[in-house]
Image (cartoon, rainbow, N blue to C red; front, side, top):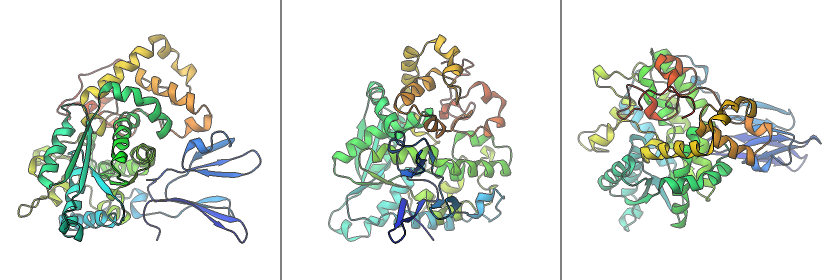
Length: 446
């Protein structure tokens, strides 16, 4: 029955027994460690364990630990966890109702809040639902308006789309700008706070970290965000190459189960570094039960039928009489956050890394970093910074590895032979899919 966002330790003072638990998907961070004296340590950050524990690891989402049993037990075990292929027919009204409920549930608060609005489908839908609900409340009658926030390089795709969505929805919109140099200057602080060396997570966390600092200065304490939709509905561009509905569904399951290592880690840590709380409606338990029970045949991308990525979600909110969003936003192509803030952001990061990591360093990378050996200069650069803050072997083992293209799992890389020579987590690595895809690149050190 546990619901919501949480990581907690519950102590029974009568016998000093305790329970540790983490929310279903791992939206909040949690780690567990063991001292040489037999003590057990629990922390929301690696920094709380790396000096005191001989060994530590990420506490798995949807699990609980009891001191009496001295073992982990899964408490969250929904039907889709088995990877069995669902067969419930797609009903757009059921899906729409489920997401609206998930958003409204997260609006219970008595302090200033806002929405993160990138102008993409997910954040725009969340903003639209929130704005509609608030329009009927007492706050709206007294002039209260929803505040929305976006960040990007000057002239970036996200800034333009977010501005259009905000104008349409009537939010008080805050547009923040940063330069490539601003981001590069913040990289070390970002890695220290998010505690990972994963390339795509660092790329996306940096602008979010910079934005969170500015949002906090405005007195906002809580944010509604759109993480999770791409994992649930196969929204990443590489899903265009899914060979069948079975593989499509299994990949969405793999992606959701790994969210605590990627997008949830980013959203939680990049904002909590500044004392902000992020709530994510797309990862609501009841919404997941509805969305993950849909026959994946309906989620498959079929260009010849006009079905682009996340078609079932777009269709559910395509209301001609009372539109949630303008058509061009409702059907905007997927942009990963690190791409949408401006394409020159990733290009600038690669150029900066190339200035700090030599070809000779890359030749010896496997000797220096035998675990999760960095394959690019950018990855090597991040790894050097991470190891300086977190030199313990347990720390490096908390970060996932493996080949990836456009944020895919290693298994999905097998869907297209061309991807093996173009491994990069950017959406532009989805050759033949993204409208601004990279040119073919075979060099492993760019």
